[in-house]
Length: 513
Ligand code: ATP
Image (tube, protein in one colour):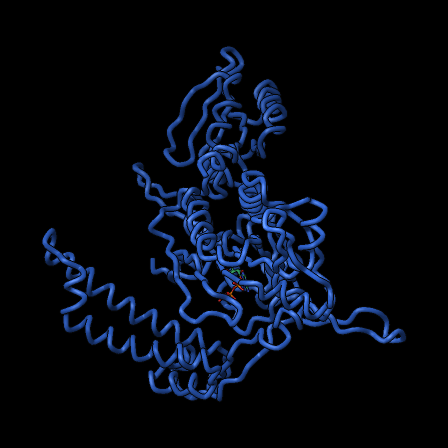
């Protein structure tokens, strides 16, 4: 199966098993808006808990807030979003499809990079043990040719971005022969800027309604509450404020399922520090966040940093944590050193003094900020796309399993009586269910053969299936089947809780951080 096909299968699986539905589906859906079903919302909840606890429980100096989506419109002027939260868009005149010009160029560069990596892999295979990658990259003519092409386009792209030169964006696209994937032609319109904020109005027209925006990021809700939290929480720098909440962006191209949505959720943390210490803290947060990701056990090789060469005007360092999605390495989280840009501007626009008084030096200053910002939905997609597996079994059958890291799996255990028409088995199974449900999200399932029930639980990623059979009535033991190894073990009912807990307790994950 190609990665493209795998992605389609995954989207269908998410719908079939109650993870993610197109929004307003009975009205034919709404572009780039998705609803989470009964399984998806549990998974999302667990991911949020992992992040929230890692931030606010493991760090005494990080606290959480929950600010509103509606905010004073001046906030978005101060933050720069009204003036500059734009994407460069371009249309193909034949297919009438719209694209982000920067993404077209980045994808083109990504393809060259892929070619280079393939050459290197070939070399590695050919030369075996004696392979010297650095030398190979420096001397192989195919690599050199691709590298030259890459550097030329890359340099033009960075210069165009810096100068905000939209005509040059188009020229790069034309010169590189980048075609529309739908029409296959190079018949492009000019590149235009498009503001991504949604607006609405607040108040009745009689009073004179105000245009307000749906927040495009949660961060500003943190900045405008900096003074409130610092004072009421008696916070001393360095300290952080964390928040999870909805954000809205009128994305130009939103064709990658929940990777890019128009309504999505962010988990953001702004860490307030003394100016001059930002590069040390930036490094520290890069390490901390990567550890959080890798700790989930989805393979360190599936993550990488992508340091930004072109920095936003307010940033003095920025990196993306990229994850290997089915469509390649893409941004999962951003880590930015934002200087005093946001607090400084809010001070200017609001006329309120927003500073920190350092009791040790008797000085006041505007704190600098390190931001970590991750999309909950992208994280859900990372987990689902990595977990989805189609396996051939020894007996010739096949199964679909979601090997979701157990502590964030939607359902932790399924309790099943061997047959449904035996009252004693059903009663014992329900007794077990009623006992376990206080600690774990469990499902009771009595319909169909055990084999079919196992498959159903595999498909939603349930780590354990617990079967109550006739012997259980006598020996008070049950069969526990493991999702990943499919091995079965007979254990006393009294030991069930401890067994499940060991594998699924989120605190075990947190302890490793
Ligand atoms: P991209 O370059 O992919 O548009 P960005 O650099 O604009 O992303 P940020 O503004 O840094 O993204 O937002 C922080 C995080 O929020 C991203 O790393 C991503 O996980 C998430 N995010 C941003 N836009 C979307 C979206 N439209 N849908 C889902 N998640 C998003």
